Image (cartoon, rainbow, N blue to C red):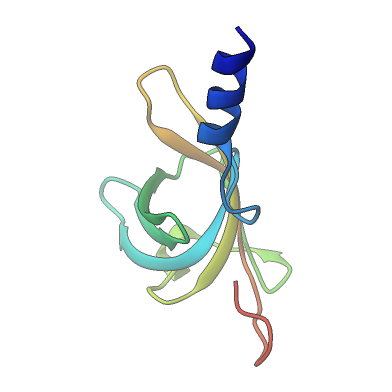
Length: 102
């Protein structure tokens, strides 16, 4: 039993900046029809869905899906629904400086 727990613990280890239910990276692509965003994360490209309940924040203000562009650095909080789809609760466009990239 202890061996199984240790094995499970090693599988769950991830980059501390990209642990469920949080992710960060740069927007690779947006699809306004399906309301999906592909984010390039430290763990690879991941697809997330935006809903009417998603908070989208840029420059400390609420923004809209159509204003999200490729290359924007973002941090987000999400959950996985019963079908395995990653739904964004909150997405924030982060400001970067020369020494701190997301």
